[in-house]
Image 1 (cartoon, helix red, strand yellow):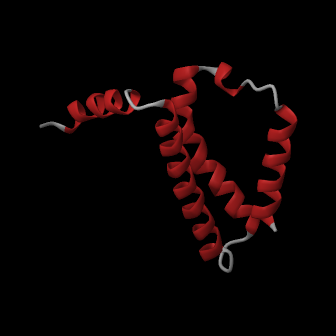
Image 2 (cartoon, rainbow, N blue to C red):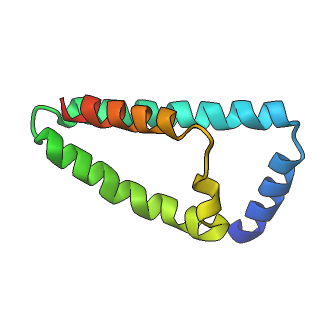
Length: 98
């Protein structure tokens, strides 16, 4: 079976799960990615300057997020809690650089 035909079936199956289960799956996936990011930063911290780490994190993050953002539009970034996201982003940047 071609790999391309599996993706719509997997998506349909995921979409049929209850919202709480989908949310838990996304949170687990996010935790794994944050753990990989933290491990990579710790591994490279002695060899690469912190500003370079931040730069490459953004450099690789933008192409990964751009297809999603182009698909859903800028409306996906709208939030009522802008201040909280500024604090979170600032803390993330400071923790990566320091």
